[in-house]
Length: 251
Image (cartoon, rainbow, N blue to C red; front, side, top):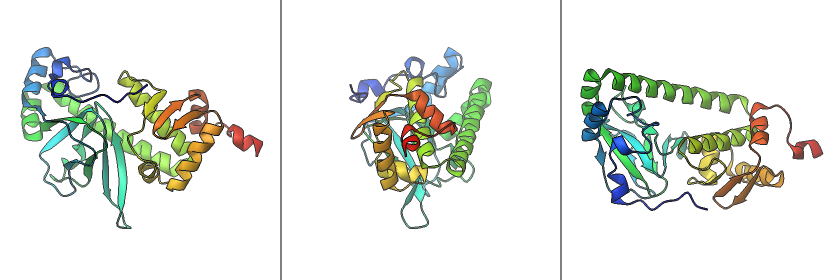
């Protein structure tokens, strides 16, 4: 099994009205004629590859970006001189909304795997929102969603232990993939253990140890970056802090 697909120019050229991600992206709830107007301003370029940047910290804000296929990480410089991972973005998710206020990007966005990206020039999007109320409402919804995700992350890092953080991360990926019509229990991680640890505030050794523990406890099966979640209810119990894992009970 593999969720990885070959990205072709044909798949990138799919218009908004026919896109399988339309329920997750900007066109949700728009009238057909309004989707047509939005589609006219969307730029669809050739596939990007691992390591390519959508934008860098300090770049002038010009566009927002929608992941069509693949995945992207956003990150900012850390106090130690490295990087602090801020998020991992999957198909249907929008990147760059945080730059609206200062008219400049305060983080960088780097492609994690071969990806297709839709670029939406923000000035033209603003023109459309002034004449399409439903599009303006959709923008408010997306901004609210981003604020909510930031709040969830603060709560996760502030109140959860290492085991709960990783379980929450895996469940979050599972739910996001399911919304995209992909398997919620069988998928590949495009990010490294180090990047996961950076995002969750954990040492890479802790992440690796927890992957092994979860596998030993029968919660998941791990083959390098291939993940199979075997017991979603148990992971949900971990996240809720409703009780110790089987290994903890045995210790």
